Image (cartoon, helix red, strand yellow):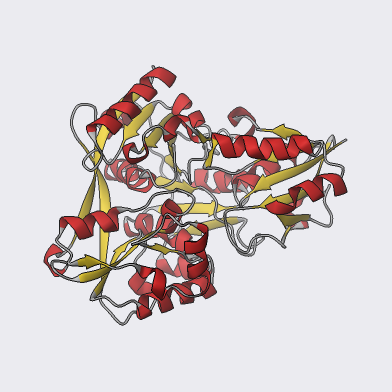
Length: 445
């Protein structure tokens, strides 16, 4: 029997366990390690989800304890099971495992993808923050307008009670409250709910797939970070970001996505340089010559742009895009610049609690406030930071509506962003070729 540690961040790690290790007596998973997401170490993967071989569940430790854990549990294999790491970071982790006597393992996509009875369109990326969400919305609305029953299945973000989060279904704002969703979850689920589309997420994707198939003509896999899909796609879109040109071949598992893609969508072409766009295009042709390429803009939408002109603004951006995505700005900064903001303030001196710690951990962040909300306490700290900020108004560049979550003492101006193809091949041109069958059914409420 091989002793195994799964390195993760509360998502892909649990999926890899469920699909590959759960009932295999030849392997014994002694622990998970946790990274990237706060407050997930010190918990257990519960026995109810872990199965018959793990009556006490599986402990979760901080990743920095890995060398000690390898020795303590006499570990044979260390399995990397989270995303958006540079190739250098991956090999640093491999070196730690090898130096302490363990093998370093990367499971294949084939070993961990589930096959659906319904057509699956997957949306993945080469880095966090490339613009998967607007593409997922565009694809889902295309099928909805054609009269198909569309279900979004979202990459996992189970940061709370894992048993309660085993299989979650979101059809309304009440469901977001019922499941006590974090800001990070709301950012991904709210826009789909606004469009009248059901979202599933959770921990047990075998069960999630079974439930989603009951009410779907087509399933859209809405990926997270730059992770590979959990469901075997009939059509795989991969979004690339020319603001980070070259990252499509230097980050894991983003390069895997690039090599597997049916379509590579080069997003943000309206704000990136031609040189960077050409680099992404050339890398795509070199590493995946069969992939079709779509070039698109990320169109920023504001209800009344005039309110920004001349104002001193605090810009809030999507948290993961700025943190492990490594971006220095997002759509909020672009909106501020395009609409003549007087000054974009530096939020760091107003930050409190864990928000202050985020700036210490990610020193590349200066004039933006990441919309961090991994739990109620952090949401409160985000609120306090915004209330303390010396500015005229807040530009909300996060996908969630902050006005619904916090009490601000200054106006919050929400913005959104949508995919707009620049010409040539369009998203719907590709979607037309996928055969989807309509079924008669009574949809859940």
